[in-house]
Image (tube, rainbow, N blue to C red; front, top):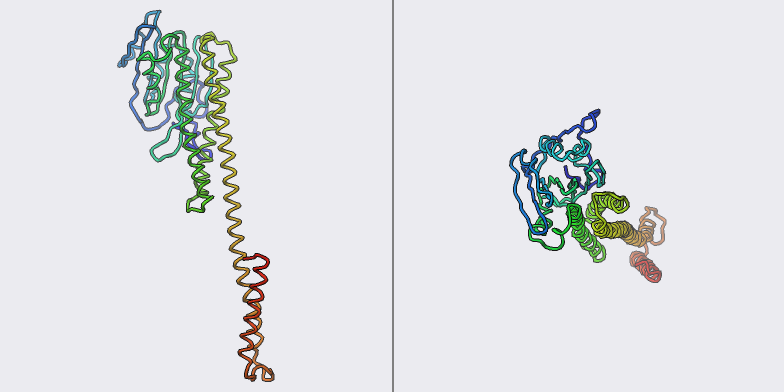
Length: 358
């Protein structure tokens, strides 16, 4: 279940209330893609990839000098997750977290296996930002990754392993887990660049006064930034835990590479906080601009009303129906009243212009 941006949208617990911890329960969601399991075996000078069609193939042993990567993609079902747990001796609590894809980024150490959860940013068909869960089980010489999303985000890692690009074949499964983490974290940078462009567009529209729904756009960007912050913050803590703890499944050389992932998360947090501050500043500027424009309108209306107040007084004064008013029967009464109105209007106009009220 993808977590979508918005005011507290994206979290919905699907496990029945009071269920036994470790119960495997599949949320009632439509199947987006059929589940497929791919196994890659590799050593320094060997690589083999195949699709597993039956559960019996999961139990096939791999030579001790090789490592293997099980890549599970598509909508997970309870039976597949259960058989994976039996094959690799995975803890039921970790398997429950795999099926309930609202988990935050974390690292949990079980006997002989390290369980990692990370989240991947994706844009859905309607252009809304969401995150998808990528689960990993790291053991002695093997890595199992589970991803329900439709986008083949792990293909860059697969290509590096398949074509021996870089040092990925020279290291073990822990380095492969680092490569997956690094790929997932790198996917956040284009998303932040896109959000930055949207903020720049809002800034330009506020500067030029062009017609754009600034309030709605700022609200959407702010919701996306909150979603990213809610994702990156625990990811940074999880990587910090991997760097501090002396886990036997992660070698010292791989821990050095993990420091680069940690630096990327710190950089992402800095960019997110900067964008959030810019978003707040633009929202404050938008509110101030609306107040300023409203003040300009009220000042214009006040000036117009002030122009007509003395004219209304003069017209009302000479509009009184009394018989003994000298000006009523005076030959020059009407021209004098018009001249008086023009003089009062001209005087008010000169006064307002001198005070720079318009």
